[in-house]
Image (cartoon, rainbow, N blue to C red; front, side, top):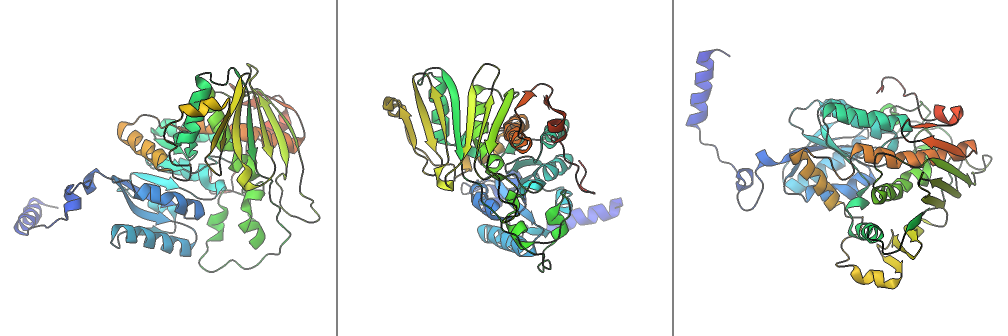
Length: 424
């Protein structure tokens, strides 16, 4: 643009009055558009829809774009966001890399299938985006370490989606243990549910409007088998069952309580029941009992048993115990007098608003979130080590400094080779 063109444009802009809505100026208690954090969503499944209202409720958040490999989900998400803001401004990107290339997007909410979490997060960090990523944050130990390094290298503000760190009931239990209300802690007991089975099924054509190659992402290519696609959490390449999917919430609580976000246990062992391969094609354990031990003797036992509604975490000390029931948000304890110290019961983990707020505050201050990459990775590593031990049928020693096992076969399972072109 030459000087004459520039002056002409300026004079035209000054001659035409601009009418802005009060919300854009920050009037009527609203946050001015220029002060909002521009977000986009990558992956619009059930979990995204559960958490999205917690983002939309924040006055300083503005969702501007969505991306999904399923056209129906992408259009539905756009409609939800447009309805919330009363406009048609939300953009759609079938290719999430095109979304990340948009300079007017500050941060992303990643809620893809598990196989995509690390890859999408690292691509977002490289693009200069801060993020909230659903758990599990990685599918293997080496992925988690690469995520930590990428966020550190690019100065990324990252919040892992283990929102129970921001939930009143869980925070109360942690505080009571730290204050010594159950005496010396010696065991953390965790219960997830019995892993489901997936029956054998046949390949079918990929449904219209579904980019299946992108849906698979960095994992091995396989034909489109509806039962496998719908039950993706129970196959080793796309998910790792309840131990990973739910267990990481509780190992995250344990690590946080013990103030060991930069380390972990030193020993793992366990046993499990596997699905019958004649009847089922799913691969992850049904019932299991896995144990780990820290160097100072504190133990953790994780059970996969009973139903989804029976999940909990219990801290056991030499003078009592305290437990949080995940389904009901109920806290129980022995001695019962501990419960007299609890104030307002607060909202349950189903509302991630406080966890989202913590992220937004960190984006503005550039201080680490409550579930920063290193913390998320270390909590996830515990669950991944448990699964590796079950798959090998071995007791394993773990060096949390070197992040290596005393078994070469187990060390090889720390890494997965991503399918081209999704190299990280």
